[in-house]
Amino acid sequence: RAMKEGGNKIFFFDKSMGQYAKEKFSMVHDLRSALEHQQLQVFLQTQVSSADHVIGAEALVRWNHPVRGMVSPEKFIPVAEETGLIVDLDRWVLQQAVRLIQDADAQGKRLRVSVNISPPHFADATFSDHVCHTVHAAGIDPTLLVLEVTEGLMLHDIDVVIEKMKKVGDTGVKFSLDDFGSGYSSLSYLKRLPIHEVKIDKSFVLDAPTDSNDALIIDMIYSIGNVLRIDVVAEGVETDDHAQYLKKYKGLIRQGYFFGRPQPMADWLRDNLHRI
Ligand code: C2E
Ligand code: MG
Ligand code: MG
Ligand code: MG
Image (cartoon, rainbow, N blue to C red):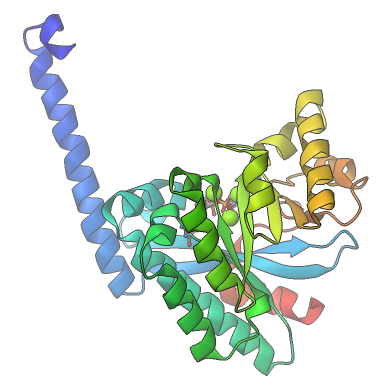
């Protein structure tokens, strides 16, 4: 296309591509050093039961960059995924989560923590062994750890995916299917995967009070969750309207700005641990 447009357009095209590659390169470099120099932080977001009890939190990584400020995971997770750095990054977050569960336990609290596992990390040959080893070495109750995976896993052989999940699941660690409905959703995956929980993608929740199609999709995922006897979580519960709308779903777990924004770990513990 650049060729057809001719002339100096090629120059601009090349320059912008070069610029993009440079930025990505510098981000990967910075991200690697961020991992080594403790510039990454775990934030926690509350998950609330249908009876309004705090049942746990999702760990969400933040990058506190000395020049760029707080960088959103939407920006750097894709880069980390493309370069393989995501394995170390996810493992670091997992380690923080496990320590958090230990610390809460020392204070007599059973804190449930959800951690996001990126598809290339799950695909890593050592994934299952590493999780099993981490949980065993920490001596935590494995049922307090939830691993959030996405439909992106399904690009791989589903039998291999199931086998890996079973190996981890045998220890007691739970799996949750995140962002359900946003990707390559297939109901057969929901049925076949050894998961304990499904999270309704926030795009449906955000529009449910006004969009009858989104409302129907929530009805459907909720019903399937009940049939399969797995927990259902609604994410993106932003406003009082959303919270009111979801009241009709018995047993639904809820997460979103309405119940609390993601907060630095220490702040979250101070405000919430006594409620558990
Ligand atoms: P996710 O796992 O689906 O996490 C939920 C995202 O929705 C979070 O964005 C959260 O801050 C945001 N959110 C929570 N409540 C609301 C709400 O009421 N309204 C709206 N509009 N958004 C809400 P965040 O923290 O920016 O993370 C974005 C994504 O980055 C996550 O989506 C997850 O896929 C990924 N991510 C975050 N931390 C990690 C990590 O440690 N490892 C991996 N592999 N991915 C991570
Ligand atoms: Mg998640
Ligand atoms: Mg999600
Ligand atoms: Mg996600």
